[in-house]
Image (cartoon, rainbow, N blue to C red; front, side):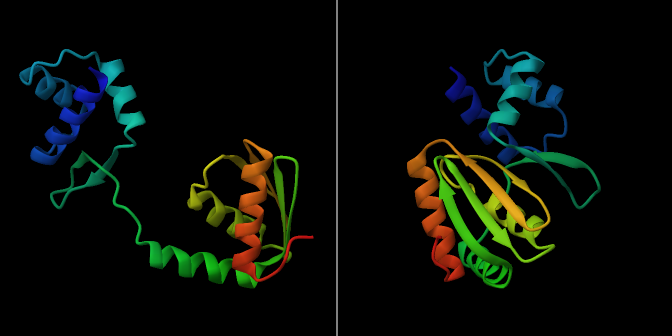
Length: 154
């Protein structure tokens, strides 16, 4: 039922300019789906729907636009090549050492990668700690980051 409801939500926001959860709830009811505001709120969060600004100045629900991979790759390469000194891993952690003041920019770039198994990141001034779900995930990410920077892991 949840998958059908969420599919219908995508159909509705593609066909209508939906500005509120209540409005979405009404459209769903017209389509035979009974859902509470809390359920709709959870669906919106799970589906990662966003509100975008329309030309007439109102906000409406939509699906976020995907980034172009080639644009992202250039960004990752340039940020990493200019900022990262070393990449290493131990257990399910990856540590990235950067030039002073560059860790936050590199960390933001890593956050945008959406790497499988990446739980979270913490950046200081010149060091980033990355927590991964498994040692295998950490090894893969460390190898990937090392490849981008052109510097081998320690």
